[in-house]
Image (cartoon, rainbow, N blue to C red):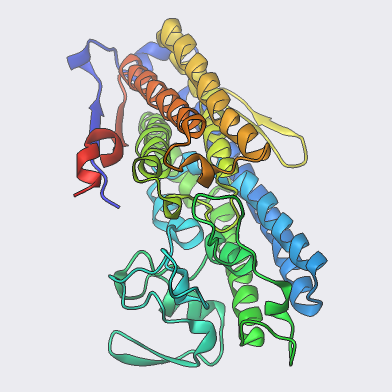
Length: 423
């Protein structure tokens, strides 16, 4: 995906005072501690729910049925709730951004993994591996070399197949690979209905549908095991002596800039642009973030909630407990109360706009239906969310200026140069 990088540099040129001079009694180091504590809790919740998903997958494989498949789907949906709230930590922290593609890469050419409808819009003719179908083949050719895929392991998925030949659409791991293996393709376009993979795709023996049920089960289990392993790594990165935390603690002023970068980039270029506006411009459900399950409304909503969590320094865990402390909001309020009030209001507005999409989807109009050409209600909901996120980003810019901080916010052609989307 092409992204335009927008630099927001605030400091003496904007008439702002250095960060330390503005904050008075608010200690930036304490703000960093809260930020890191919320990150650690969010990834820990992501890990615990991924382990529940891993167990549900094992049950599905051992006893395939409509009930066990549905239980695995519900476990996947539950696992997305805390994970999506961690995405505000991605762009400001290189250790997270470099890792993120292993667990949340999208969109994917699902034919790399398993059978697909050869006439579907999902077929990517520009990717030689878009129909590789690892599950159906015990030997494949990648980069001109024969690759033994007879045993499907986490190491095969992550070390050989994921982003094979440097092609981002060759997604072999993470939430969306698992999502595809649970739901299958959504062949409904912008009409109602999600993917409808039958549980018999995991039944061993003569009743197996789709072929290679044993290998499909091995792939699903390997992907679930790998997701848990990857999340264990990220939890450790945010522990008291973890690398992600210690990098931020080394220079709290740079840490504050990292917080603002993460908020702004997710708010603007990633969420408002690549994940929401682009799909509307193209009226294309293939641009839907959770396109197999039709749960995109939840991903968008919890992304928005995650941005608010970071700014307000407060996160509600999956067990109902809270993690909170000195926040970026406290810093901004000390520097410029009006900017803090405006940004808090904008965060509430964006969460409300994303919540309106969520409510509509839960009421029967899935996100891919909102993208349909001629769906004026869907368009209004989507554009309302985009507008709220863009407005919110402008307030984040003002917070950058108020603090005399620095932030580099990712852009998106869909927002900055819509005509380029169609070229």
